[in-house]
Image 1 (spheres, one colour):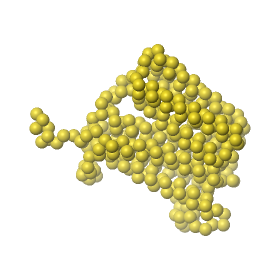
Image 2 (cartoon, one colour; image 1 turned 90 degrees about the vertical axis):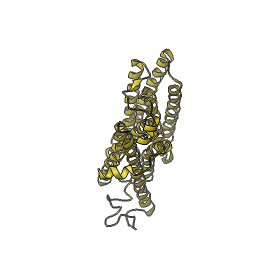
Image 3 (cartoon, helix red, strand yellow; image 1 turned 135 degrees about the horizontal axis):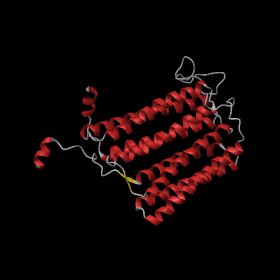
Image 4 (cartoon, rainbow, N blue to C red; image 1 turned 60 degrees about the vertical axis):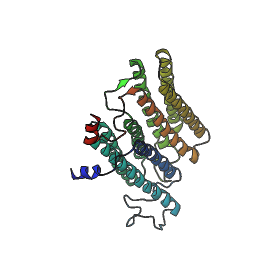
Length: 324
């Protein structure tokens, strides 16, 4: 109760601030995955070999006979970026909480905001497990997949600030909704398959890290086939909308989803053809985040939750009386 009183003293966040913190959540949740890939491809995953300390007895990198200084600082820098993610997650909760104090019906918004710090806690635990297990491939995979889910929820949070909380009314027919569900499922399958390719690939985060013992050629082909499946569903979705009609917003987001998906497929193909160069790995991780953002935005545009009710503070009792 006392904490709510403190939050109530904060100025009501403007519409620009509400959007800004949600966009920052998308950027930080996606960005930490990209910086994590840089740690992996530079072989810096065990630059800080303990957790939560960097090395035994110190939170910061210190000269160590087994670990290069540069690798230590790359890994430590990635850990420091977690602090930015935590800050943004806290801001999301504070902004949503302040909105709910004026608009009590916006509990869904606050629940979505709380996903951000909850995700940070989960990622901290998974990150610690990853270090303590010396970067076992499946722990790295779980780390990435949780980031992917958090990127998705960040997009939902951004849209929640700009919409109401009515029961969703779908702007597409039932068949279109079913295809959207299939599209999300296909995206999930692509992401999971991608982590197996990474697990068997040459960039394990440390030269001594055990890799997934499976033929990477087969795993890459499965990953590519699933991407084709995702694009097939996306095509069917567009054909369905041509018959039944769709709004301009839906078509724009549909086109953006195609653009980032094709670009991601091109990067993946080039990456495979060139023997998985380090720079393309991080670019591919960035592309994965963009595909998630595009797909989530398409999903949100396909349903209507009513007009936004919290872009402005609730009128004071005096203002309400004057209006009457």
